[in-house]
Length: 544
Ligand code: HEM
Image 1: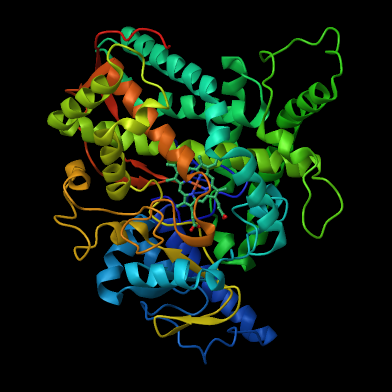
Image 2 (image 1 turned 180 degrees about the vertical axis):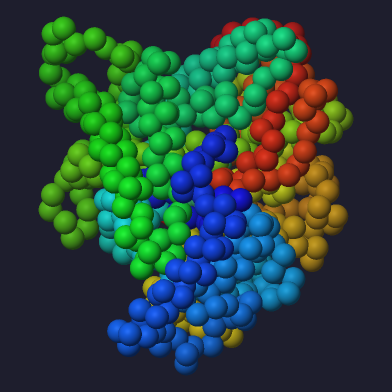
């Protein structure tokens, strides 16, 4: 079992297809257990000697939770359970209720799984819970000390960064401007799937890999303003995977006193950070010199096509941050660009993978979806504008994100100042985790909540996925920290699914039966990566 707890994506990455987390970071259960017991005893002795101890939380009335050990809290029980964190929490929830506490070493996690409490905390009293907790030292380096939208504490920096991303990049008008980037990525996706299927002896394809690559291409082009050659994209993608691996939570994140034992991992993380800066700064500099109108440097081989008129990066060069005079540094630009690319890549790709699995499981639903697409576009290739007018597709995607929220937890929240929720104290240093899956499958809110049934949204059941009025399903979170990429995320999931279904009929591979078991990486991916058989349909004509 990998040692895996929820974490923010910061400037880092997300995952999706990577189940190859090195065991040096993911300790096995038995080593971990032995390690924690001995380490716990050593720390206890050390703390006694220096007169240390608790943090004076005795007077607080925290939500209930399983009793834990001194120092290590519930870490040992979690490790010994042999479960993934999402399953460990799922099994505790019926015992401890809608709000409960887990102590993971030095971190106090408060898990909220009630619709009402989520609405109260995120919407009604959104300001009070709008911050983010402290980061571990490795993440702090990658996020330039929380210089990102997702990691910034609630305050002027967060407001400046978020406002810039939302108004300059994620508005409907701006999204329309990148129509051709999406169209190109969709064509490439279809070509890749066709080629992979033709090369494989059984005509099958690995869904997540190609979809993830397509989304990555779109976000890379939007971020840096250039459409890069495939080899360059793959290179950047490989680097992002390494970033992801070194940012995996480590034992010393929860037991900082053990950090002297993790020197090698820390050094490796710093090398990856340097490589990330070395790789991305040339794109930043290329863009800067193009904006200045410099002539291309002689003899420099270009790994990208001519530039677009606008990119996320352009908005960052002279970004005015409340309370700060200087423009973002190179390292900060790398961090902000990585956040933009990573925030939307695995979340979207994971959603599509589960979506294709559901279509294979339900051929009737697949037929209805195909009919919906054809009724709107006829023989023409489906575009981002078309998907808005496809009621069944939109119902399908909503149902998909209800039952398979790409992240089962929102990013970790923190209280701005000590407060209360559900009758319990919430200290500022607690990690507040909103558990999205039980919220979206609450039997008080849904008929047959466990059934995958897109028609529910066409026959009277409703849900505002922003959670503004009430919280029924919030795959993008809710309130002040709601995902700023909601519209783009929905558009990409809709468009990719529509194009994949327009071009191919999807069915199960006889040797790889579909299993709906999940695995927590950054997003919750299919435990057995989906391998499916594709049968080309009538080829649509090129775009108008
Ligand atoms: C299907 C696609 C997506 C899903 C399911 C998703 C989900 C989420 C969730 C659950 C959160 C946490 C909200 C909270 O803390 O309460 C979040 C935050 C965030 N997402 Fe997304 N996301 C998606 C796509 C995107 C895209 C396309 C981008 C941008 C390019 C993006 C950028 C962000 C950022 C910057 C935050 C942090 C917001 C803040 O802290 O103020 N996401 N997302």
